[in-house]
Image 1 (tube, helix red, strand yellow):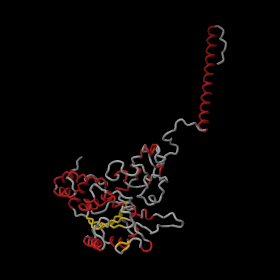
Image 2 (cartoon, one colour):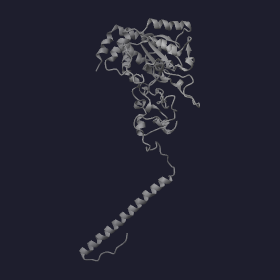
Image 3 (cartoon, one colour):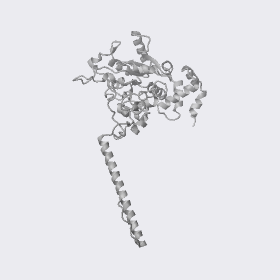
Image 4 (cartoon, one colour):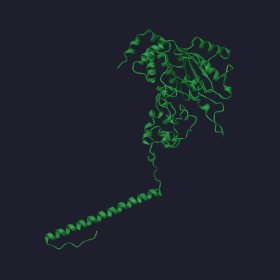
Length: 401
């Protein structure tokens, strides 16, 4: 059934103006809003509310900090197509501070950050990308003479909400990995997630990198309803991190049927069979990678579809912790160890065990055949003798079968 609320907006001048700002026609803009509502798991009719919010409300100010990271999260945002980055930062949000994308530097850019925070006090979104070093007072990451710890606390004090984007900011990510050195108990810089520094819950969007639409959908939800989406116990938006990757994986049917790639490049790998036995962490990783994919390039644009196991980058204790080749801890039924091989080799001699079984079966079959033949012969002899008695003639001589 058609969404009457959305249809009623088609003649709204605000929708036309918003579509022009985003270099879209009216239909494309409404489709974008419907896609955002669907990604967020909102009920029918919510797409109209999203469209009105994007068209009418003031763009939220965003302060984006970079700490101990590779800038992969920003690179992921650079490759978003619906909308593109320039439309996102100029028409959907107001990106008032971002060290990577700013043309300015030094005192000028730090002054811009402070001005934006003062002008939007209590209303801006603080986005943090990268882990926060804590060892030795946090001296391993400084910007403008301030440590990452100091900047985080300063900027979070008057923020409407704090979003930790990427696994590094969410829980420490790769920088928090304990090195394989005797006696090591922590990472060299004591890397930590944002929530541990602030001592309060924050919205986390883990991934290495996370899908840009998970961030964009979170911002659109804030813009539409004035609050952040519902999160799980780890602060992750439920619309993106409530289901295991394994549940919606395109190779799930092969898992259920017991068809696995055993080595990279083997017959099962070439045929697109399940990567569980190559170390895929999809069965213990919560994310929507298998649903919304990456890169706006159509099907097959995520690691598992490309033939590489999921490394569990969204899960603390899995990503950057468990070796890639180790088998995942399943949160549902384990595959049977007695499933047949994918391809049975032909022309190979039987093993001693299989030969013994075959001999036993063949012997039993031969013995059974002999007994059947003998019983048939005895039955025939008895019938002939009975017939001879009735006819009063001599019974035929027996012929042993």
